[in-house]
Each structure stands twice: as C-alpha cells, then as structure tokens.
Length: 429
Image (tube, rainbow, N blue to C red; front, side, top):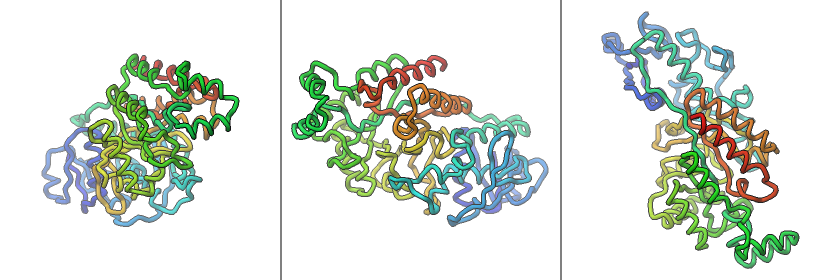
C-alpha cells in the first residue's frame, strides 16, 4: 500500500505504523505526487482534495498536520450505525486517521480536565463517556468497516486476520489477610476486630487457609483452561494510606513471587509513592528483579494512577516496555477505544515511543467498590464487554485481585462468578 500526503508529519507516520502493526502489511508514504501516480500498489490519498479517480481518498481535516495540542471541535454523528466524528466528503465519510489518532493518543488527557478524588483523569471528562461509546472498542469497529471498504475497491487487499484472546491479569496488593503481618499489625488487628480472633488464630496456626490466599485455586484454573496470566505484585517499601502490601523483606512474599514466576508471568505493580517518586519506582523494580532474577519490563500502576505524558516517560526511562494501566479505576470499558495493544505516542514531543500499551476493559474492583454490583451483575457486564472484543478479534484483558477471589465472606460469589466466566469463554474459543 502506498499513501500520498502533501506533508508527511510524525502524526501521519504514527497512524500508518499503527495500521501496519494491526494489518501486518507493508505501508509506505510519499509526498511525491509523480512517484505516487506511477505506482502499481494499492493507493491511498490523504489530503484536502482528491487527486485522481482510482485512488482511495480520505479527506484530511487537519489534526494530523498540526504540531500543537489544543481543544478540538468535535461533533459526533452516526456512521454505519456507529459514532464517528471529523465528518468528511470522501470514500469513508469521516477522517478516520484523525479520529483514531485523537482517541488512541488520549489527546483529551493532555487538555485541562477535572480530576477524580485520586487526582486521576476522570472517565466523565472523556468523549467516549459523554457520547456513550465507552463500552465499545470503537477504533477496532471503525477499522473492521474500513477494511471492508478498501476490499470493495481493491480486491488484492489482504490484511493479516486477527484472533480473539483472553488475558487474565491479577493485582496482588495485599498477599494475605492475616499471615506474615508481623506482631504489631497482628495485635492491632485483634484489638480492632475482636470478632475475628478465633478465625485469625486458626489461620496463624496453619489450621485454616488465609482468606486472601487464592493462589493454588488460580493455578488450577489456569491449567484447566490453558490461560497464560500475568501477576502484578505491589512491593512498596513503606506502607501508606493506599500502599498496604506485605513488606517485600518478608521471606514468605519473596517465596510466593518465585513460586508464581515459575508458572506464570510476573510484573511490577508500582506503588502510589512511585507515581510521584521516580527513585521509588526504580527501587521497586530492582527488588522484584532480585527475586525472579530476570529483567522486569511489564507494569501496571496501583490504583490505575498515571498522568500523561510524565508517567509513561518515567516508565521508559526505567526500562519498561509494556504497560497495562490503560483503563479506568472507576468504571469499566475502553479508555483508549481499542482492545488491541499499541505503541504510545508522546503527544508533547510528537514522537512514537517503544512503550507498548495493553488496554484492559474490565476490573472487578470497579464492579465491587465503585458500582456496588452483585456477582451476577458484574458477570453480565464482563460478558457484554468481552462480546464486544470477540466481535473485533481483540484481546480482552481482565483485572482481578487475589483477595476478591479468596474465601473472605464479604466476597462470597465472586470466585464462582470468575470461574463461570472463564469456563464459558474458554469453552467457546
């Protein structure tokens, strides 16, 4: 495929690289009109106006020619039954390149916004929430329809077929409820919750499994349904209001991590302190690497706390290559409007980076703590989101926590709900 555009910008190059990554075809770009007209390739024109009758034409609305970040005038309309914006009079009906760029770079997160109680970009600021398409991987839907339109004009166009994948991930914020807390915390827990004394003593004496210990059960589930999960461990050296993990100095936690790493991928769950202290991030990464004795390059921030572009730049500076925080810590859905991974574009520096973003669509903590859903209600939402991903052959990434999948009475039904979901999805794929 050869694309002609009068002015090749970093933004245009990024979108074409994104399509190349998605479709696995060779896409070249040129600003030489003569070379373009002489080519026998599948030809695209991305410009203000059509230059010939045989090329596929996408009319540029200007976003990809800009070099600054400013509020965009966006008006959504219905395009083949879906939301779209940047309407045009071309072979598609809207500037799909600019629309994809706006959503996938998280352009709106660089603008002024109202943060949530944790200082994060809040979902209610997003176009997806306001226009009612947060529950859809809209970019993926657009691109599927786009492929169909190209094939109608060029029968030789044959992109690589995509396949659906379920990726189970877990955040290990507090590895155990009662065990390995140290005497001061144990005594404090007994005084604060006297009704739990009998149960706590049974757990500490080894007569009963810790209520947050779901590790053996998870391993059996993964083996039964051939899942390849990722575990994100919180290893803050100092506890705080939000970082309440077991100390990484505890031998039991170190052993849990090593045992887990022998069966699954292990990654870092950077603390809330590391979100404002780069040296803490570096230290936590080194701690985890010392336990598993190999480089750690995957990460997801605790409380989904990150800010663009600074958080991602810090990750790159510390050797991370894969990031899994792209989603909301309040509601479920598609924050970047895609279910496929993509390279992060640093909008301030106008450059494509090597940091690959893996967006998640469902986190059970949103269902339990934020939306106050029952296990059945959560299952219905998770299945609906997964069905959207299956339609576009994307990757459905879920986040669960060990304690919600344990045996604590307040989480009754969540383990069974999760197992039912995995059984239904893996049984049909």
